[in-house]
Length: 174
Image (tube, rainbow, N blue to C red; front, top):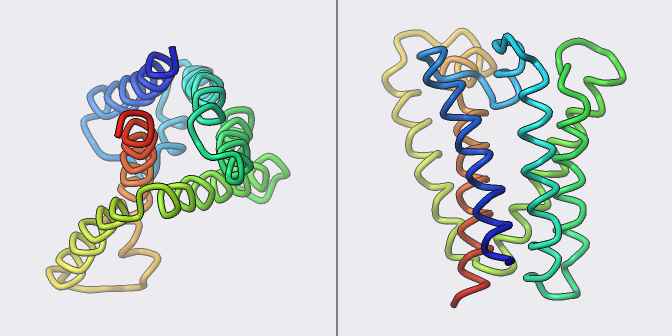
């Protein structure tokens, strides 16, 4: 049952990301940015909420008791992202979204570091990609522009998703 919850959660995320990539034929600046591309905006919230809701009980069952709070906070962060999809601007909703996304990233990667630290090597691929892109860039106007054009946030999210789900399955079966 735990495996099923993890795989369903991952399948929802992968289906959502694949759908947005294929329907728009381009990589977004972030997974959250896909919200603004959708005709049916609620799809973002449904995907994020259902993925987190399926994942939370599985994570709480798998991870050691002394780090369960990281699983809870990480999934909670994703739930906040789901219910506050409008991240542009200086609104309260945008701030909730940013805090939720930050908590999600930090807590998920702390879990990875504590349970399967060798998976953190995956971040090396992202760093290598960014270094190569930086060296190939003809002109760097600003770091913010470079990071935006290289889709650094999107690829950060992908690495975080892959390392988190791999950690959960690894912890469950190895």
